[in-house]
Image (cartoon, rainbow, N blue to C red; front, side, top):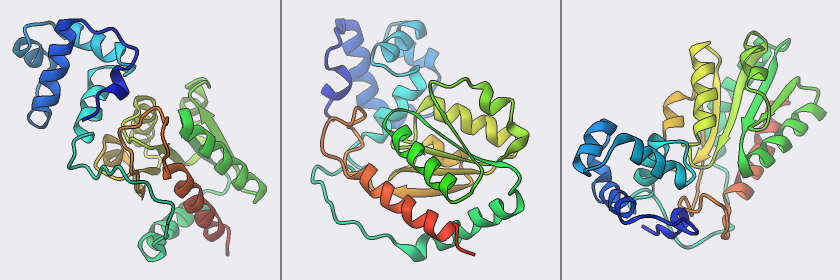
Length: 240
């Protein structure tokens, strides 16, 4: 695992390095283990582990845990990028039909799109693409008030979320809130099992050959392939 991605520019103490080393070495055994137990095993405190996660720019320990877990070599990570992309239309045909069914039954409500970071760029494109096709759509980004979704939950037909990692905490929070209010959730994410997958009603998976590149600093075809996929889905979605 290349830790430079999350530790670059961060000054970690020896204690923090030991905690991080422990987490990486035992990550497959820590699912469901409480933070207090982990703190005991590392001779530290839960607060110290949380501060370490935040220093590494995660919202907390849970997001750090899932990042490390999904960064293991057996989670479909490859170093070779590819620009060839074939959309398996048969695989997603049923999901698109389900999306259309939800839309047709709720045309008076808004399709709401939420994403953060680089994903929000693609989300805004999808938002405008749906608008020009006459579909009531609402785009919400991380900079917008959470009240936009919370206070309009009765006017949302479906929540479309985009998360390359499937572990973006703010996305998880919006998905959880929507699920609690019985709002269908459509997720676009990278390959692998993520927390977001368990919350979504429908999942569209796009191959991500660089899941460790959370800052999107290297060549990555994920967003390009996602854009092509969305173009196809919108075309199918607006047809009678």
